[in-house]
Length: 307
Image (cartoon, rainbow, N blue to C red):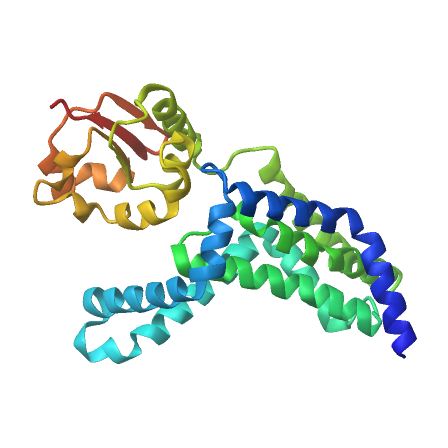
């Protein structure tokens, strides 16, 4: 048994030797030179050192806000439970939307039928991939209250490994019953139409606004935005983007003349808010220098405050 474990360890090191060497030299270079611009490595360092504390504090803060603004005194004691349930449901809805409902059904069917029959090591490997992806994305959601679909691509690809086996199980039943194959093919076709036709409202106005900010706002100008994607495409916030977004997400931070600290504002505004502007929009009372919007009327409004 010991010889088997040693042989596996040797095989693992041989297979991953280049990756390990690159990682070691990369970390050595980073630790020795510690360049000022380290890209997103700073986020990894932050998560390793402060990730759990940030996670705990954010859950407590959001639970407090939920108890004060929604549940009231009578439901305050259940605020953390309600928040966790909400985040869990939110997470699973995101996973289902990313994978598509029909593929989720096929994955569930494959699990129910226990197909394919996998040996213990393969089960452990696949389970590890699933658990690692769920942990990373779920923790990110709890920390930042935001989850882009692209963050779930790796998890979706792992789940899709079971789909061919579910389809093969249906095909094997073709002579007995044809409706499972035909029904599945129909729903897969319907689901695929979203790749060819745009049935929703475009969000390209968000990236367009961010790119405009990147090209037209001076680097040293104080920029405020309440949208993470706009902030990202503006290339204005560097490694502080997530912490800055936490401070900017609530527009009430601009009240009491606090908005005068900024030179530029890029405010993402829902089409419903435009019909009944918030007190902050009324308080700022500036004329937008640029407006980006989609067909529904959702906008990113860019303002410039003249000193």
